[in-house]
Image (cartoon, rainbow, N blue to C red; front, side):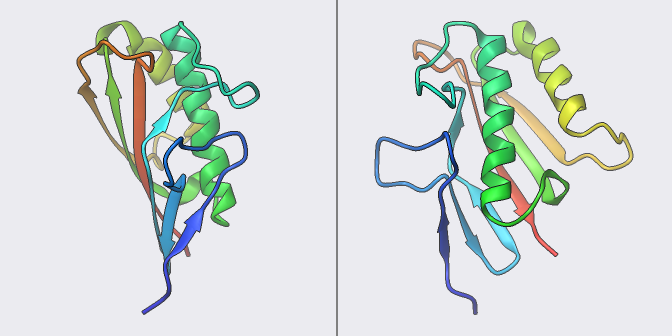
Length: 128
């Protein structure tokens, strides 16, 4: 069995001692990814901007693990207001995964509310 490797991504980190992702062999699983601005680390008030930032973090995390977005097999999103965020989420989704014949599975769940991050996600990638 391969040894587990912590993955750190540029422009994204957790306050706790948690890596952006973890990889064993060909499989990588991310920790929860938030919509913080990759340059400033601040959380934008705008849900659409948080979604743009999350997709940036998804790309940089999978690349830091040695892969690309083509290796992502599933993404789960938690959104405070899924109806309000659907257009922004779908817009960034199609930008990152333009080939409708080759998109990862996706599940979007309601997150409730009352926190600065209006959207979070985690994802799974399989390399090779």
